[in-house]
Image 1 (cartoon, rainbow, N blue to C red):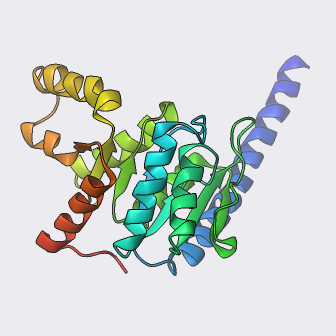
Image 2 (image 1 turned 60 degrees about the vertical axis):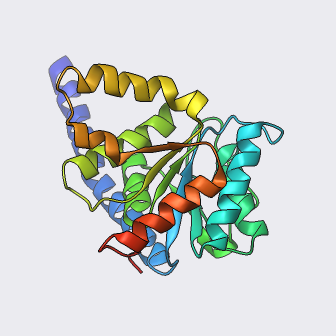
Length: 228
């Protein structure tokens, strides 16, 4: 009797997994349809916990504004903190402001600076990450936590393994990122776990002007061009 009950429960799980495929497909289709129309954009990542009076919030807002002035729109995770600052800077500068929101039990909620027709909601992190990579011409990574690191290293891995074309990845805040970069150089590289050229996949800067300079120089010198 106990075995039969367990067997029925297992069948229900398998059935639910199968139907989840359609929900996942729906998120991909909706994302592709909306984001294919946004034009060249740069994604800004960072902590949802950063307050509006923090220096990193203000810097993210400035970075977003100057990215817009250079002809790009801005994509964020759509939530508060650094994400809100990115959307706010883009909105005030009159540029495209996109939010890819994720359903979470805490922290996450739509910020008010996303264009009304460019706010998307996702249940699946992996679908959302595909959208960031596919529709971004660069990643600007402000100080953040595990989610920020997840986005950063996913992009580095995809470029390193030639699954996607190279695009600029800019870490903002040498004080914040310096220890991580030193560990990558002194541990990963020394142990032979990465190649010396992999270090060149990331740039570390402190100002909005440096961010924009790296983005513009990349697309001026590269055979690649923004994918729109």
